[in-house]
Amino acid sequence: MSETKIKLKEKDIRKIEEICTFFDNKPGELINVLHKCQGEFGYLPAEVQEYVSDFLGVPLAKVYGVVTFYSFFTMKPKGKYPISICTGTACYVRGAEKVLDEFKKELKLNVGETSADGKFSLSSLRCVGACGLAPVVLVGDKTYGRVSPDSVKEILAEYDH
Image (cartoon, rainbow, N blue to C red):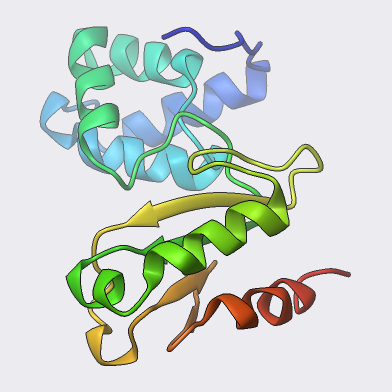
């Protein structure tokens, strides 16, 4: 885990403990605990994982394994407006790669990165189940269908305030 160490505040540690206690500190509740922690902190840095490991009595390697296995979990903070481009088969065939390239160009970001101002983060995902609207882009919880490279600037303009 080669990332910058963050220092958790005492209230953050108490919050992790509270979440673990809510799930009775049961190792079998690891995914639920991580889900709730990510909801609280926005991501799961190594330090949060270490406290979860301690409170649940689960080896840190197992916690890290779960975090890195499931694409829902992230160890990097996401932007205020997380942008996900679907690259599933239907979206890919209908030009998702060109849409993704346009987002990369406009935001000057690669997949997995967050803008310096913390506003946008960019990711790709496999399928959002809206294949009839391909190619599909998600910005937070909002879904954009039939997105073309030309519509990328318009989408970004909605969040540029």
